[in-house]
Amino acid sequence: MILRMTAMLLAVTALASTAFAASAPPTPSVAPASPNAAQLAQAHKADAQRAIEAGNAAYVATWRRGDAHAFAQLYTPNAASIADDGTITRGRTAIEAARAASFARARFISGTISTEDLVVEDDVAYEMGSYSFTLQPAGKSATTYSGRYLTIWQQQPGGSWLIKTDSGLTDRTCKKNA
Image (cartoon, rainbow, N blue to C red; front, side):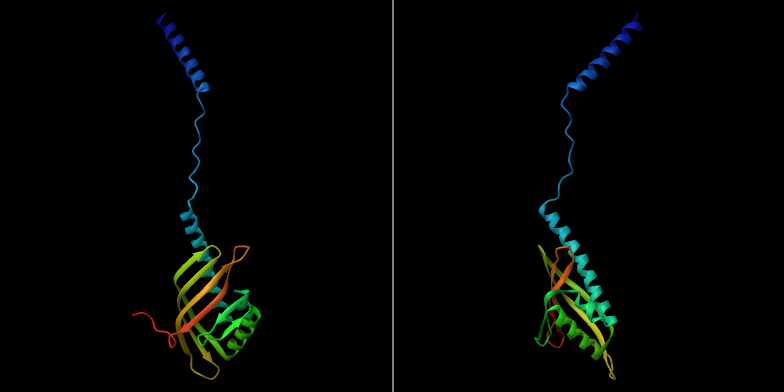
């Protein structure tokens, strides 16, 4: 008899817990927290930084190859390139022609671009840093040019980043902070 009562008690308990579970409100699923504005801005800056690092690598690689057309493709169609003497070259086509002439005058030996600061605001990035390029004019010794630069990058509708404006100042035209 005790065995029968125990079995009956277990059956009632199981039935009651099933009925209670069915009548209880569903447990809300916890959605993952959506990123806040600061996290989104940080992710956007990281994406921009990766694209700009790739752009800088392409800048050096196209110069090394002497490929003025590929070099100019790093710029927006209406870009401006400002030389350390203040000369402004406007437009991708003019930048390509200027680089072709420059590449013909001197062979690229080596170069580095070092980003020191990057500020990203929506689809515009302001990159500041230093550079060092060693060039060898035909029939002359190689010369190393180093200095500081400011490049303004613009994100394109497809997500890529191109140079909108760049300006470099060689060490002979600027002094670094001590």
